[in-house]
Length: 210
Image 1: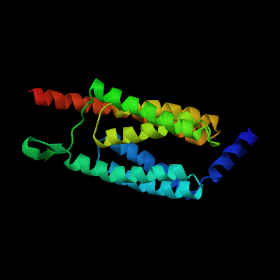
Image 2: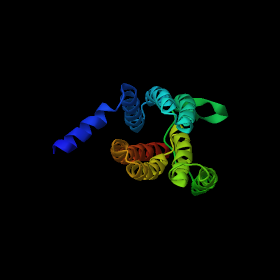
Image 3: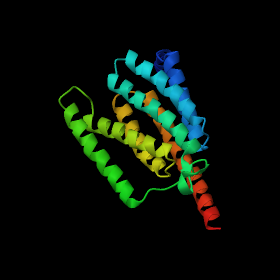
Image 4: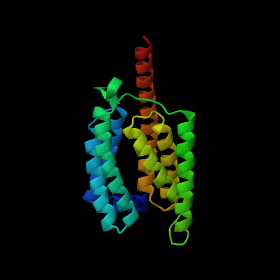
């Protein structure tokens, strides 16, 4: 018991205030996104900027570069949620509604993700990267799925569930148990997000048909 207690104490002691803040804003973003609250995008921006500094200091340069994309998507997501709904002749009719993709759009997105992650994964096999193909898949898929969130595509939650499930495995395999536990929490929130967005999508469809 004492040994376990000491391990947990060391684990939490090793976490910097920067890391705690980055995780907190990441969770805030997800909770607000579930509620379709546009403030999720400022929360995301703060979280990714903190993560950028964190990964740069840890010399995880590819992860840091990915945060730059996420920062750009925070601005794009804000604009889409605020002004993305357009009616006839390009007229803006209000906030962006939840929508779904066709089977063809999903096939294209998944195929492109698999091909690109395969190419990047193969390139990473020539380095000392751990799990090059899985790492590449989760990174590429996260970029596609973040775009889906910005467009309020319902199925983004399904994509996130797959990505986060792989994340739990990767972090556990690397001994990053705190991050693995965080991704388990993400899995629960993702399910809640899908249920809530699906309810809103059905209500919007019913109103449009009335």
